[in-house]
Amino acid sequence: MLAALDEATSLKLDTVQVFTKNQQQWACRPLPADGVAAWRARLKDLGWESRTVSHASYLINLASPDDALWAKSIDLMEEEIRRCDLLSIPYLVHHPGAFTTSSREAGLDRIAAAYKELFKRTKTLSVVSCLENTVGSGSNLGREFTELAALRDLITKATGRPERFGVCFDTCHAHAGGYDLSSLDKSRAVMAQLDAELGLSWVKVVHVNDSKAAAGSRRDLHEHIGEGTIGLPGFEGVVGHPALRGVPKILETPKGEGTDGTPLDTANLRRLYSFLGSTPINQPVTGTKSPSRRASTRARTPAPTRARGRATR
Ligand SMILES: [Zn+2]
Image: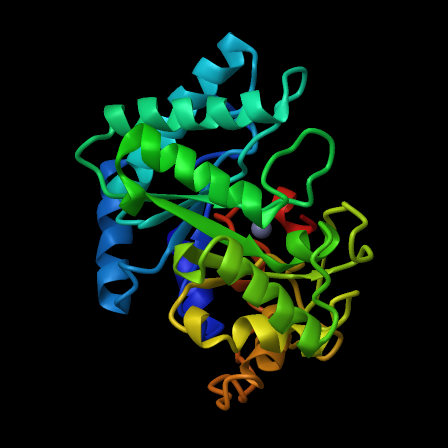
């Protein structure tokens, strides 16, 4: 995880998203105290304590009708929240979950009940759990903005802790989920709809990804900025939106280097910064061939060695 901070600073980024454990496994070892101390010291130096993000394990399904899986999911989510607290990570992004053999309504109630238990167990903590919008494949919840708003209302009612709830807005998921972002006008309209149906103040994290699959395809395939079915103009409506200016934005696009040796993150960032009237990353990044840098490039968004699952999501 410290390597992720080094990588982010060398790429002139100003935040990171990490996994605090292997995202494909239930079991996890406690975080080592010296590692935690080193991470916190670096965050403080960088001034990033209010803007880093963790992504929870993919195994967690808080909407599950299966009691054993649901209980296991709550236990792991509690661990994820505690790790964020320990690491001074304010935002924990997770997928709402799938209702599988039950119903949409039962799934939503199940998530709210899980939150009630989680916030009871972690009463003194302030980590903000952020539900990520999804493409809505199968029985996965969280595609529609109105559904995210309904979840916010249910969770707020169940827990009385609205300040611990947030939303992560993923551009690829929205677009493939049916909210067409493929032009500036369209993306402005989608953001206006998100504001009307949820409220942009609930958006605490943005995942900035183009989409390989078509609008409304319900397929989750991330692409480099401007090279997918969203296209560059559509990102202006999101990244350039004044209400999202200070909100941490994460690239979950494939890592590595272009044919000229430019890190792919840098290429993507240059495109996005064109909407902000500034280009703080207009110089080539040096030292791009070092093995340690190369290793963590893939892992900039998630934690080092745990990035494979993210690269194409
Ligand atoms: Zn995402």
